Length: 348
Image (tube, rainbow, N blue to C red; front, top):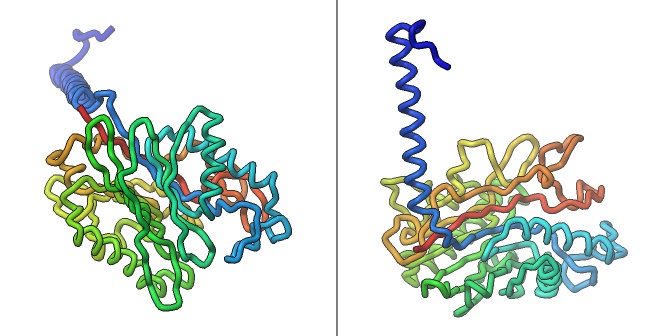
């Protein structure tokens, strides 16, 4: 119990000031939660699955991921990979999930079967890309909430001899509201050969996407852009070419980049040395961000980098890094070298 008799006037004033701040903060928080926590949400996500290959030796450069290859990629290791990925996706509990670094439709079907064992039912959208490693982008979606209207691959051509991943574009009908959601899954060219030396390739990918969005008039509609961009939110390909910016009250840009919220937090989606990068991002068009479009709106503070402790490496040189499948040639039986990102849309 506080003894006011022993306190001077200034101490009493300071005490009541603190109490007022706490009560005011709680009141504001309660208002915010009541406004957006309707219980009606659509959870979005993206995850780089890190080399989800089957065990077959195909024409493209997948030799390491075969039983005779450098990674001794046999049925057991493939099954472990599917089980590990399904554990994460099950815990994410998303309604729509963009993925990349998948070899073909077959591996996505195998992963879907693992998820169905956990009670998760997803449908799949996938196209083969011309990538030299044979990896593609794909999409899982909840058929109880979403229906595919149409889909197509958008070719990215960084050079005559360069072959990279297509951008996957899927038009989804949200059955509860009747809204159409335009979902773009990206996996832009890597930084192999150096960040500056490869920057032009990612600029081409950014320009390809920007040209498609503006040419089709989609920025005035409900657009979600997700992916592993191999660039950070502050890099030129994202900010200047694509025109994605950090969301703010006075911000006016093509896309509102939720990944930019993490730039000052020390968080990231993958780690190189001691530094985190935010290559994996979710971006929203104005109608989803500024509450002036359709029924679906961004739920404030819902965006996150999913990083439970069991997804991070414990001990050793790479402690705290995402626990991946291989560390060099050492089999770690982990998840991925990237962490997933998620966000929620709400509706009344």
